[in-house]
Length: 553
Image (cartoon, rainbow, N blue to C red; front, side):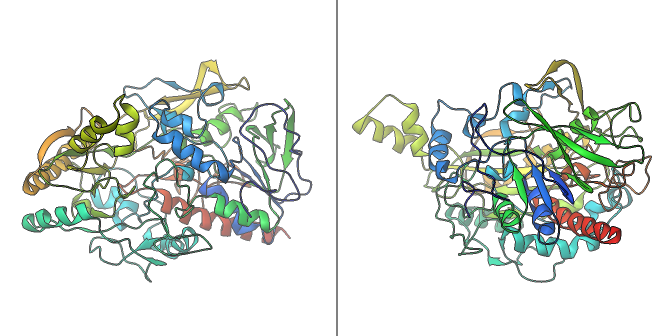
């Protein structure tokens, strides 16, 4: 069933427009579980539970028609449109404020709608390393998780099968695994072969990258056909997005209600959530009652929702007896360098990177953060983008394309940011969204350890590029870094109720029937893309909710 068809209990599909579209968005009676958010975490939880329980999924955004993806792809490559325009992000609904030392461009990489951020992610899926779960003990900084790698190991394997991951066991620095990836890794690109020679000369290891995209047909979806616009649009469906599990949950009987932003969570006097109060396009508000609630709205909207749910009993917001809701907001920092060679490098034939280097990751200590290196396949402009930005034609255009395309080369990298209580999400007192609620206020702080590690990553990147024979034209160092748009922290996991918001099972310390499924529960960020860990935790949350419901019957 496609995302454009009816989903769950005979309810009709929504759209991107505004106003009343005639869709039934009334609450479902006798629901067992209400899931807030239809991104990867919420979708996996809903799919996990829908066979045996009455599940309702509420999402603030629309259900996008997959038939529109080619049009979105065209919008993505035209210079007139910014990235938020591709998936309709912006305006009063998505308003926010910045108040920290570092500006955070929140809407640049958000998607509100069924599928969430996986609609426009690049699709890289790595496991965190073992030391990432024990940073304070092993590295002397950060915090230890109340779970370790062994607790997530089987869920990591299951998540790889659920998402459909193409990978290989050629990374000597990766944590131990129990079985091969579901699909073979993508072959190294042409520019990877150029990098490989330089890295071999320097004694630097390259290895394949796990991708949540099909290297062969998988789960009734085609193999990647190489559109090259993975971020922000995959028109073919070869790259995983969360609509896969939303549709599967709906087929099992779950009800999915789009364009239903949750305004607050109501509660009783027994420390239990009783209902999610949500708005609809016709201006109505409804209460979705359930036995269990799973908030899967990401690292920004999850703490915002709990803070908006304050009451006389919980004046500082729900699940916030510790005072830590919204604190420890983290992201990965970008380090990069690039230039040109005097030979073709065949860039932009692949929209994702196929080789990486984790060699320096576990050297992390108090002064150096873990970081990974990426060998880009999309350095420099693409011919299509160049053609769309000029006003020349014919031979003149062809000559400009030949001169400007084909010899670029670049590397990227992700660096860990340590948790800091002053880096946080709060409510803004002076600005409201389209429903009259205070917007999220972002105070983003970046520490010296991360900035120093960016310099270290740059040193390695420049050394490789120079060994390759490239003329290095740019370096994204500490003064030019930015976020990777991986929202983490804000709902910290901890055994101690005074030190965090959720326990080792991602259930809130303060509320018996409320779980958090997202990277917001990460005590530390590591330097690996977070989605596979989000997926593994979501599957684990689904099992815990299922067990809790079983105990009640």
